[in-house]
Length: 438
Ligand code: AMP
Ligand code: GLY
Image (cartoon, rainbow, N blue to C red):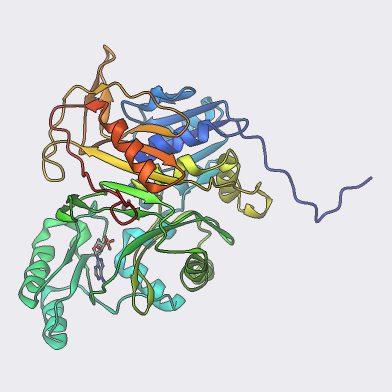
Protein backbone atom coordinates (compact mmCIF):
# COMPACT_ATOMS: atom_id res chain seq x y z
CA UNK A 1 0.00 0.00 0.00
CA UNK A 2 1.34 3.45 -0.90
CA UNK A 3 2.25 5.71 2.02
CA UNK A 4 0.09 8.78 2.39
CA UNK A 5 2.05 11.87 1.33
CA UNK A 6 0.91 13.73 4.46
CA UNK A 7 2.36 11.11 6.75
CA UNK A 8 5.34 12.58 8.58
CA UNK A 9 8.75 11.32 7.54
CA UNK A 10 10.61 9.78 10.42
CA UNK A 11 13.68 11.67 11.53
CA UNK A 12 16.93 10.20 10.20
CA UNK A 13 19.01 7.99 12.50
CA UNK A 14 20.78 9.88 15.28
CA UNK A 15 23.68 8.18 17.03
CA UNK A 16 26.70 10.47 16.99
CA UNK A 17 26.72 14.11 17.99
CA UNK A 18 29.24 16.91 18.10
CA UNK A 19 28.88 19.75 20.58
CA UNK A 20 30.95 22.86 19.79
CA UNK A 21 32.21 24.92 22.74
CA UNK A 22 34.18 24.63 25.96
CA UNK A 23 32.04 25.99 28.78
CA UNK A 24 29.75 24.64 31.45
CA UNK A 25 26.88 24.98 28.99
CA UNK A 26 28.55 22.60 26.54
CA UNK A 27 29.51 20.18 29.32
CA UNK A 28 25.87 20.06 30.41
CA UNK A 29 24.61 19.74 26.83
CA UNK A 30 26.99 16.85 26.14
CA UNK A 31 25.95 15.12 29.36
CA UNK A 32 22.23 15.53 28.60
CA UNK A 33 22.57 14.48 24.96
CA UNK A 34 24.61 11.41 25.85
CA UNK A 35 21.75 10.26 28.07
CA UNK A 36 19.25 10.42 25.21
CA UNK A 37 17.72 7.36 23.60
CA UNK A 38 19.86 5.78 20.90
CA UNK A 39 22.90 8.06 21.30
CA UNK A 40 26.23 6.25 21.07
CA UNK A 41 28.87 8.96 21.11
CA UNK A 42 28.98 12.62 21.94
CA UNK A 43 32.10 14.55 20.94
CA UNK A 44 32.85 17.99 22.27
CA UNK A 45 35.30 20.43 20.73
CA UNK A 46 37.38 21.96 22.18
CA UNK A 47 35.70 20.83 25.42
CA UNK A 48 37.24 21.23 28.86
CA UNK A 49 38.80 19.24 31.70
CA UNK A 50 35.50 17.53 32.46
CA UNK A 51 34.40 16.43 28.99
CA UNK A 52 35.67 12.89 29.27
CA UNK A 53 34.26 12.49 32.79
CA UNK A 54 30.87 11.76 31.25
CA UNK A 55 30.79 8.25 29.93
CA UNK A 56 30.47 8.18 26.16
CA UNK A 57 31.77 11.74 25.70
CA UNK A 58 35.06 12.48 23.97
CA UNK A 59 37.09 15.60 23.40
CA UNK A 60 38.43 16.94 20.09
CA UNK A 61 40.97 19.72 19.68
CA UNK A 62 39.33 21.72 16.90
CA UNK A 63 38.77 25.43 17.45
CA UNK A 64 35.16 26.61 17.60
CA UNK A 65 35.48 28.68 14.43
CA UNK A 66 37.57 26.26 12.35
CA UNK A 67 34.84 25.38 9.86
CA UNK A 68 36.98 23.12 7.68
CA UNK A 69 38.37 21.30 10.70
CA UNK A 70 34.84 20.78 12.01
CA UNK A 71 33.60 19.50 8.64
CA UNK A 72 36.49 17.03 8.38
CA UNK A 73 35.86 15.75 11.92
CA UNK A 74 32.12 15.40 11.26
CA UNK A 75 32.82 13.39 8.15
CA UNK A 76 35.37 11.08 9.70
CA UNK A 77 33.34 10.53 12.88
CA UNK A 78 30.05 10.22 10.95
CA UNK A 79 28.41 12.92 13.02
CA UNK A 80 24.62 13.06 12.62
CA UNK A 81 24.02 16.37 14.40
CA UNK A 82 26.17 19.33 15.42
CA UNK A 83 25.05 21.48 18.36
CA UNK A 84 26.84 24.84 18.54
CA UNK A 85 26.92 26.25 22.09
CA UNK A 86 28.50 29.73 22.15
CA UNK A 87 27.62 32.92 20.32
CA UNK A 88 31.04 33.62 18.77
CA UNK A 89 31.06 30.71 16.28
CA UNK A 90 27.38 31.33 15.51
CA UNK A 91 28.02 35.01 14.77
CA UNK A 92 31.05 33.98 12.68
CA UNK A 93 28.84 31.84 10.42
CA UNK A 94 30.06 28.41 11.52
CA UNK A 95 26.52 26.98 11.31
CA UNK A 96 26.23 28.27 7.72
CA UNK A 97 29.52 26.63 6.75
CA UNK A 98 28.55 23.29 8.26
CA UNK A 99 25.10 23.36 6.67
CA UNK A 100 26.63 24.08 3.27
CA UNK A 101 28.63 20.89 3.76
CA UNK A 102 25.36 19.00 4.25
CA UNK A 103 25.47 18.65 8.03
CA UNK A 104 22.48 18.94 10.36
CA UNK A 105 23.20 21.83 12.72
CA UNK A 106 21.39 23.13 15.78
CA UNK A 107 22.30 26.82 15.92
CA UNK A 108 21.38 29.81 13.75
CA UNK A 109 23.44 31.08 10.82
CA UNK A 110 25.36 34.36 10.99
CA UNK A 111 22.37 36.43 9.92
CA UNK A 112 20.09 35.05 12.62
CA UNK A 113 22.88 35.30 15.20
CA UNK A 114 22.72 39.09 14.71
CA UNK A 115 19.92 38.83 17.24
CA UNK A 116 22.73 38.74 19.78
CA UNK A 117 25.73 39.98 17.82
CA UNK A 118 24.25 43.40 17.05
CA UNK A 119 22.11 45.13 19.63
CA UNK A 120 21.09 47.74 17.03
CA UNK A 121 19.95 45.03 14.59
CA UNK A 122 18.11 43.26 17.37
CA UNK A 123 16.29 46.42 18.51
CA UNK A 124 15.23 47.19 14.93
CA UNK A 125 13.87 43.67 14.59
CA UNK A 126 12.02 43.98 17.90
CA UNK A 127 10.43 47.25 16.73
CA UNK A 128 9.40 45.62 13.45
CA UNK A 129 7.97 42.61 15.30
CA UNK A 130 6.14 44.82 17.83
CA UNK A 131 7.95 43.12 20.71
CA UNK A 132 7.81 45.02 24.03
CA UNK A 133 11.23 46.46 24.79
CA UNK A 134 12.76 49.63 26.22
CA UNK A 135 12.71 52.75 24.03
CA UNK A 136 16.07 53.11 22.34
CA UNK A 137 18.34 55.25 20.19
CA UNK A 138 21.08 53.85 17.94
CA UNK A 139 23.99 56.26 17.44
CA UNK A 140 27.41 56.01 15.86
CA UNK A 141 29.23 58.99 17.34
CA UNK A 142 29.78 60.21 20.89
CA UNK A 143 28.37 63.61 19.88
CA UNK A 144 25.08 62.06 18.73
CA UNK A 145 24.87 59.97 21.89
CA UNK A 146 25.48 63.01 24.11
CA UNK A 147 22.89 64.96 22.19
CA UNK A 148 20.27 62.24 22.89
CA UNK A 149 21.27 62.34 26.56
CA UNK A 150 20.94 66.09 26.56
CA UNK A 151 17.43 65.87 25.14
CA UNK A 152 16.09 63.19 27.45
CA UNK A 153 17.79 64.48 30.61
CA UNK A 154 17.66 61.13 32.42
CA UNK A 155 20.17 58.33 33.05
CA UNK A 156 20.19 55.77 30.23
CA UNK A 157 21.50 52.24 29.73
CA UNK A 158 24.53 52.31 27.41
CA UNK A 159 25.14 49.24 25.23
CA UNK A 160 28.04 48.67 22.85
CA UNK A 161 26.49 47.31 19.67
CA UNK A 162 28.54 44.13 19.13
CA UNK A 163 29.62 41.09 21.12
CA UNK A 164 31.56 42.23 24.17
CA UNK A 165 31.59 39.07 26.29
CA UNK A 166 28.88 40.45 28.58
CA UNK A 167 30.92 43.55 29.40
CA UNK A 168 29.45 46.01 26.90
CA UNK A 169 26.48 47.19 28.99
CA UNK A 170 26.44 49.98 31.57
CA UNK A 171 23.28 50.63 33.57
CA UNK A 172 24.06 54.21 34.57
CA UNK A 173 22.61 55.77 37.72
CA UNK A 174 23.08 59.39 36.73
CA UNK A 175 23.31 61.56 33.64
CA UNK A 176 27.05 62.06 34.35
CA UNK A 177 27.66 58.29 34.58
CA UNK A 178 25.74 57.85 31.30
CA UNK A 179 28.02 60.41 29.61
CA UNK A 180 31.11 58.64 30.97
CA UNK A 181 29.88 55.29 29.70
CA UNK A 182 29.27 56.80 26.27
CA UNK A 183 32.83 58.16 26.14
CA UNK A 184 34.17 54.78 27.23
CA UNK A 185 32.44 52.90 24.42
CA UNK A 186 33.78 55.34 21.81
CA UNK A 187 37.26 55.23 23.35
CA UNK A 188 37.76 51.91 21.56
CA UNK A 189 37.66 49.72 24.64
CA UNK A 190 35.26 47.31 22.94
CA UNK A 191 37.02 47.29 19.56
CA UNK A 192 34.64 46.72 16.65
CA UNK A 193 31.82 46.03 19.14
CA UNK A 194 31.92 49.72 20.13
CA UNK A 195 31.53 51.36 16.69
CA UNK A 196 27.82 51.79 17.28
CA UNK A 197 25.96 52.32 20.48
CA UNK A 198 22.44 51.64 21.65
CA UNK A 199 21.09 53.93 24.34
CA UNK A 200 18.09 52.57 26.16
CA UNK A 201 15.59 53.72 28.71
CA UNK A 202 16.16 52.06 32.02
CA UNK A 203 13.54 49.49 33.04
CA UNK A 204 12.89 48.09 36.50
CA UNK A 205 11.83 44.63 37.60
CA UNK A 206 13.07 41.08 38.17
CA UNK A 207 14.87 39.39 35.28
CA UNK A 208 14.09 35.98 33.88
CA UNK A 209 15.51 33.96 30.98
CA UNK A 210 13.25 32.15 28.54
CA UNK A 211 14.59 29.73 25.94
CA UNK A 212 12.75 28.72 22.79
CA UNK A 213 13.98 25.86 20.64
CA UNK A 214 13.20 26.87 17.06
CA UNK A 215 13.08 25.02 13.75
CA UNK A 216 12.66 28.12 11.58
CA UNK A 217 8.86 28.07 11.87
CA UNK A 218 7.83 26.49 15.13
CA UNK A 219 9.07 26.91 18.66
CA UNK A 220 9.16 24.95 21.87
CA UNK A 221 9.61 26.78 25.15
CA UNK A 222 11.67 25.46 28.05
CA UNK A 223 10.85 26.30 31.68
CA UNK A 224 11.92 29.83 32.65
CA UNK A 225 15.16 30.16 34.58
CA UNK A 226 16.60 32.89 36.76
CA UNK A 227 20.28 33.74 36.61
CA UNK A 228 22.34 35.66 39.22
CA UNK A 229 24.57 38.07 37.36
CA UNK A 230 26.38 39.77 40.22
CA UNK A 231 29.48 38.26 41.80
CA UNK A 232 28.58 38.72 45.45
CA UNK A 233 25.78 37.80 47.83
CA UNK A 234 22.91 40.25 47.95
CA UNK A 235 23.33 40.94 44.21
CA UNK A 236 26.33 43.16 44.83
CA UNK A 237 29.71 43.41 43.13
CA UNK A 238 30.57 43.35 39.45
CA UNK A 239 28.50 41.74 36.71
CA UNK A 240 29.58 38.25 35.71
CA UNK A 241 28.52 35.67 33.14
CA UNK A 242 26.25 34.25 35.86
CA UNK A 243 27.00 32.85 39.33
CA UNK A 244 24.09 30.44 39.63
CA UNK A 245 20.55 29.82 38.50
CA UNK A 246 17.38 27.96 39.23
CA UNK A 247 14.46 26.64 37.23
CA UNK A 248 11.56 26.64 36.81
CA UNK A 249 11.44 30.25 37.96
CA UNK A 250 8.00 30.89 39.50
CA UNK A 251 8.33 34.50 38.31
CA UNK A 252 6.63 33.32 35.15
CA UNK A 253 3.77 30.87 35.62
CA UNK A 254 2.20 28.96 32.73
CA UNK A 255 0.06 31.96 31.75
CA UNK A 256 3.08 34.29 31.94
CA UNK A 257 5.14 31.95 29.79
CA UNK A 258 2.32 31.74 27.29
CA UNK A 259 2.18 35.54 27.17
CA UNK A 260 5.92 35.62 26.46
CA UNK A 261 5.39 33.11 23.68
CA UNK A 262 2.66 35.23 22.09
CA UNK A 263 4.04 38.73 22.50
CA UNK A 264 7.77 38.05 22.24
CA UNK A 265 8.83 34.76 20.70
CA UNK A 266 6.23 34.12 18.01
CA UNK A 267 6.43 37.65 16.56
CA UNK A 268 10.24 37.51 16.67
CA UNK A 269 10.41 34.20 14.83
CA UNK A 270 7.80 35.39 12.31
CA UNK A 271 9.81 38.56 11.64
CA UNK A 272 13.03 36.59 11.22
CA UNK A 273 11.18 34.43 8.71
CA UNK A 274 9.84 37.48 6.86
CA UNK A 275 13.44 38.62 6.52
CA UNK A 276 14.26 35.29 4.92
CA UNK A 277 16.09 33.96 7.97
CA UNK A 278 15.55 30.28 8.64
CA UNK A 279 16.36 30.37 12.36
CA UNK A 280 17.17 26.91 13.67
CA UNK A 281 18.47 27.04 17.20
CA UNK A 282 17.76 28.75 20.50
CA UNK A 283 16.17 32.15 20.90
CA UNK A 284 17.07 33.25 24.40
CA UNK A 285 14.89 36.11 25.58
CA UNK A 286 16.36 37.98 28.52
CA UNK A 287 13.27 39.57 30.01
CA UNK A 288 12.55 42.14 32.65
CA UNK A 289 9.15 41.73 34.30
CA UNK A 290 8.06 45.34 34.60
CA UNK A 291 4.80 46.60 36.13
CA UNK A 292 3.50 46.98 32.57
CA UNK A 293 4.41 43.42 31.54
CA UNK A 294 7.45 41.51 30.26
CA UNK A 295 9.93 43.55 28.23
CA UNK A 296 12.90 42.20 26.30
CA UNK A 297 16.23 43.36 27.71
CA UNK A 298 18.22 41.38 25.18
CA UNK A 299 18.04 38.49 22.81
CA UNK A 300 20.78 35.89 22.60
CA UNK A 301 21.22 33.28 19.90
CA UNK A 302 22.18 30.38 22.23
CA UNK A 303 21.43 28.83 25.60
CA UNK A 304 22.30 30.92 28.64
CA UNK A 305 25.01 29.72 30.93
CA UNK A 306 24.48 28.77 33.81
CA UNK A 307 20.79 28.50 32.90
CA UNK A 308 21.54 25.65 30.48
CA UNK A 309 23.37 23.73 33.20
CA UNK A 310 20.30 24.15 35.40
CA UNK A 311 17.81 23.09 32.74
CA UNK A 312 19.57 20.12 31.14
CA UNK A 313 18.98 17.71 34.06
CA UNK A 314 15.22 18.36 33.68
CA UNK A 315 15.16 17.31 30.01
CA UNK A 316 13.79 13.94 28.96
CA UNK A 317 15.61 11.45 26.71
CA UNK A 318 13.91 12.95 23.65
CA UNK A 319 16.12 16.06 23.77
CA UNK A 320 18.58 14.91 21.09
CA UNK A 321 15.75 14.12 18.66
CA UNK A 322 14.12 17.47 19.40
CA UNK A 323 17.34 19.36 18.61
CA UNK A 324 17.76 17.26 15.48
CA UNK A 325 14.20 18.09 14.42
CA UNK A 326 14.94 21.81 14.95
CA UNK A 327 18.10 21.45 12.86
CA UNK A 328 16.11 19.79 10.07
CA UNK A 329 13.18 22.23 10.19
CA UNK A 330 10.62 19.65 11.31
CA UNK A 331 9.96 20.16 15.01
CA UNK A 332 6.42 18.94 14.40
CA UNK A 333 7.87 15.48 13.80
CA UNK A 334 9.91 15.33 16.97
CA UNK A 335 8.80 13.21 19.91
CA UNK A 336 7.27 15.20 22.71
CA UNK A 337 10.01 16.55 24.98
CA UNK A 338 9.33 15.40 28.51
CA UNK A 339 10.40 17.89 31.13
CA UNK A 340 10.75 16.61 34.67
CA UNK A 341 8.53 18.48 37.10
CA UNK A 342 11.21 19.12 39.73
CA UNK A 343 13.18 22.06 41.02
CA UNK A 344 16.72 22.45 39.70
CA UNK A 345 19.39 24.48 41.49
CA UNK A 346 22.78 25.43 40.10
CA UNK A 347 25.66 27.08 41.97
CA UNK A 348 28.75 28.22 40.08
CA UNK A 349 32.22 28.10 41.64
CA UNK A 350 34.53 30.72 40.17
CA UNK A 351 38.26 31.30 40.42
CA UNK A 352 39.75 33.98 42.67
CA UNK A 353 39.97 37.25 40.74
CA UNK A 354 36.92 36.50 38.54
CA UNK A 355 35.59 38.35 36.55
CA UNK A 356 38.50 40.73 35.92
CA UNK A 357 41.61 38.60 36.32
CA UNK A 358 40.76 35.00 37.19
CA UNK A 359 43.64 33.00 38.59
CA UNK A 360 44.43 29.80 36.69
CA UNK A 361 46.37 26.60 37.16
CA UNK A 362 45.08 25.49 40.59
CA UNK A 363 44.50 21.80 41.12
CA UNK A 364 40.92 20.61 41.52
CA UNK A 365 40.12 18.33 44.43
CA UNK A 366 36.76 16.75 43.74
CA UNK A 367 35.27 14.29 46.23
CA UNK A 368 31.71 14.72 44.99
CA UNK A 369 30.03 11.63 43.58
CA UNK A 370 27.39 12.63 41.02
CA UNK A 371 24.03 10.86 41.33
CA UNK A 372 20.73 10.80 39.46
CA UNK A 373 19.80 14.18 40.98
CA UNK A 374 23.26 15.69 41.45
CA UNK A 375 25.66 16.77 38.72
CA UNK A 376 29.02 18.45 38.52
CA UNK A 377 29.66 20.31 35.27
CA UNK A 378 33.08 21.59 34.35
CA UNK A 379 33.63 24.99 32.70
CA UNK A 380 37.03 26.70 33.08
CA UNK A 381 39.05 23.53 33.67
CA UNK A 382 41.65 21.56 31.77
CA UNK A 383 43.25 18.18 32.07
CA UNK A 384 47.05 17.85 31.99
CA UNK A 385 48.77 15.02 30.15
CA UNK A 386 49.30 13.36 33.52
CA UNK A 387 45.53 13.46 34.09
CA UNK A 388 45.45 16.25 36.69
CA UNK A 389 42.51 18.62 36.52
CA UNK A 390 43.43 22.30 36.84
CA UNK A 391 41.48 25.53 36.88
CA UNK A 392 41.65 27.26 33.52
CA UNK A 393 39.10 30.08 33.47
CA UNK A 394 36.83 32.39 35.42
CA UNK A 395 33.82 30.20 36.05
CA UNK A 396 35.47 26.91 36.94
CA UNK A 397 32.60 24.49 37.53
CA UNK A 398 29.05 24.23 38.79
CA UNK A 399 27.14 21.85 41.01
CA UNK A 400 23.53 21.26 40.02
CA UNK A 401 20.90 19.42 42.08
CA UNK A 402 17.24 18.54 41.57
CA UNK A 403 14.65 17.93 44.27
CA UNK A 404 10.95 18.33 44.88
CA UNK A 405 11.41 21.81 46.34
CA UNK A 406 14.00 24.54 46.01
CA UNK A 407 15.12 24.36 49.66
CA UNK A 408 16.15 20.75 49.21
CA UNK A 409 17.62 21.32 45.75
CA UNK A 410 19.84 24.17 46.98
CA UNK A 411 20.76 22.32 50.16
CA UNK A 412 21.95 19.38 48.01
CA UNK A 413 23.81 21.64 45.58
CA UNK A 414 25.65 23.41 48.42
CA UNK A 415 26.46 20.11 50.13
CA UNK A 416 27.87 18.94 46.81
CA UNK A 417 29.95 22.07 46.56
CA UNK A 418 31.41 21.35 50.01
CA UNK A 419 33.03 18.32 48.40
CA UNK A 420 34.84 20.36 45.78
CA UNK A 421 37.91 22.45 46.41
CA UNK A 422 40.51 24.49 44.59
CA UNK A 423 42.64 27.34 45.87
CA UNK A 424 40.68 30.59 45.72
CA UNK A 425 37.26 28.94 45.17
CA UNK A 426 34.60 31.65 45.17
CA UNK A 427 30.86 31.21 45.14
CA UNK A 428 27.70 32.91 46.28
CA UNK A 429 25.94 31.44 49.31
CA UNK A 430 22.58 32.97 48.43
CA UNK A 431 21.81 31.60 44.99
CA UNK A 432 18.06 31.03 44.77
CA UNK A 433 17.31 33.36 47.71
CA UNK A 434 14.22 34.39 45.78
CA UNK A 435 12.70 30.90 46.12
CA UNK A 436 14.23 29.59 49.34
CA UNK A 437 12.73 29.61 52.80
CA UNK A 438 15.95 28.41 54.44
P1 AMP B 1 22.38 42.77 28.38
O1 AMP B 1 23.80 42.38 28.03
O2 AMP B 1 21.68 43.56 27.32
O3 AMP B 1 21.59 41.61 28.90
O4 AMP B 1 22.49 43.66 29.68
C1 AMP B 1 23.16 43.22 30.84
C2 AMP B 1 22.34 43.56 32.05
O5 AMP B 1 22.11 44.97 32.07
C3 AMP B 1 20.93 42.96 32.04
O6 AMP B 1 20.93 41.66 32.55
C4 AMP B 1 20.19 43.92 32.93
O7 AMP B 1 20.43 43.63 34.30
C5 AMP B 1 20.82 45.24 32.61
N1 AMP B 1 20.02 45.97 31.60
C6 AMP B 1 20.13 45.89 30.27
N2 AMP B 1 19.22 46.68 29.66
C7 AMP B 1 18.53 47.28 30.63
C8 AMP B 1 17.46 48.23 30.66
N3 AMP B 1 16.92 48.73 29.55
N4 AMP B 1 16.99 48.63 31.87
C9 AMP B 1 17.53 48.16 33.03
N5 AMP B 1 18.55 47.26 33.07
C10 AMP B 1 19.04 46.83 31.89
N1 GLY C 1 23.66 33.72 31.89
C1 GLY C 1 23.61 34.78 30.95
C2 GLY C 1 24.09 34.47 29.61
O1 GLY C 1 24.37 33.34 29.29
O2 GLY C 1 24.17 35.39 28.81
